[in-house]
Amino acid sequence: MGQADQPGNAAVRALPTAEYLAKRLGELAERGNIPGASVAVRIGEETVTAATGVLDVEFGYPATPDSIFQIGSITKVWTATLIMQLVDEGVLDLDVPVRTYLPDFKVVDEGAAASLTTRQLLCHTAGFEGDLFEDYGPGADAVAKLVAAMADSAGQLFAPGEMFSYCNSGFVTLGRIVEVLTGQTWEAAIRERIAVPLGLTRVATDPNEAILHRVAIGHVSGPDGTNAKAPIWQMPRSNAPAGSTLTTTASDLVAFAAAHVARGLLPDGTRLLSEASALAMRVPQVRVPDTEAVGTAWGLGWNLFDWAGGPVIGHDGGTVGQSAILRVAPDSGVSIAILTNGGDLGVMYDLVRDVFASTAEVLVPLPSAPPEQPPVVDARYFVGRYTSAVMAFEVVDSEEGLELTMRTVGVAARMAGEQVRTSRLVVRDARTLIAVEAKNGRHDQYAFVGDGDRARFLHMTRAVPRVVAGEPGVGDHAADRAGAACADGGAR
Image (cartoon, rainbow, N blue to C red):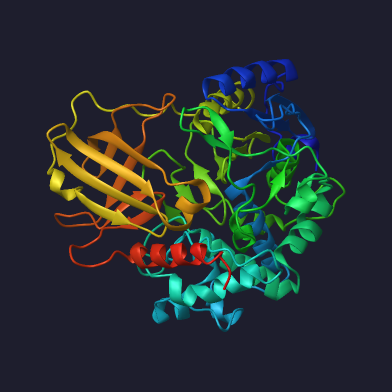
């Protein structure tokens, strides 16, 4: 096969220079109040990197291209890759019940637990409560303990396969499948099955490994709006397969992406994945409600973006005080990773837009603005309370118009402090509200799902169920349990 026939070698323009990336990254970091950031852009075998700012506002250590940052939920694509390796090995079938591999698997709804498949976990259609962050300690059994506890904490939001709802706990379950079928911890599988074959040398899954590198410290907004160190460096190990621990560089992240661009083929002729599995991960499995927060569909691990000049695959990530972006244009072989340690990640999409336009001729759409003449709809469809294990929303129709108040609850409030935010909204369409005020050029949007005269869910990647008067929401019980676990030190 000649070079022109290789996957990811469509005609592209030249890579951006390191000088350009550093300048643009610095401008955007300043605009977004981001302490430090790192970027890598890769085409084929060539990578250009840059960094700006500091790793820690207290000590002022400069960020460099070899600094490691937490990649948050981008980890889910790594976990999905492990799962597809097991498919290649013939030990896993995506379409048989999860109980084939985890006989004791339970969620609150027994019927759902018995029918759930690995495919539904991979594309976030399992339907159970997705944000279960209880801390079961740093031991090798942390993932197993969280999955066992789901029998009492993973309430069913909707029937398996009915719709999309982003599900961290589903990916923890996938991590447990990896552990059972490989006989390794999830961390050992990541190292042996992904990091080593790809030659990645700056990958850490716990503080003991991270401290050997130039490691970013997360930052949150203090009372006066300035950046302050996050109260914790790492979220619980129990959520590692979903994105609580994996830490690496932007250049190692695009090296991982390059293996997917090459449809699983590595430069030495060995394979990370079969071509069939690598391509299957990009096939749409479910549509996603349109809020512009993510892509239009989800594959097997990958978020899928319907952009002019595409296709584009990717994922975002966020932990306590750190955020990340990965976008990949497989046809042109262009990938970009941006890692930050605080501030507003949203400003960095301008750099994604610039790089893709100049290298892959992919046009990243501009974010929507509120309509000048919002359509007239019955506001009662939106009004109400919606709760999950980590978030509570209230939509009211006041004299000023529609307002939404969001607050963190349970473990989320205890890990990063309670956050409360109120936004004024207008109607974008019959099922979507959009914030009047922009944050760094982007207007938050909220989709509402359900027939009849009242929405069943507020959807902002997660389907957050409406609380019926006089009845607790699905998330209320989970939030109470999460709070209790945290108050007890997080261990059971």
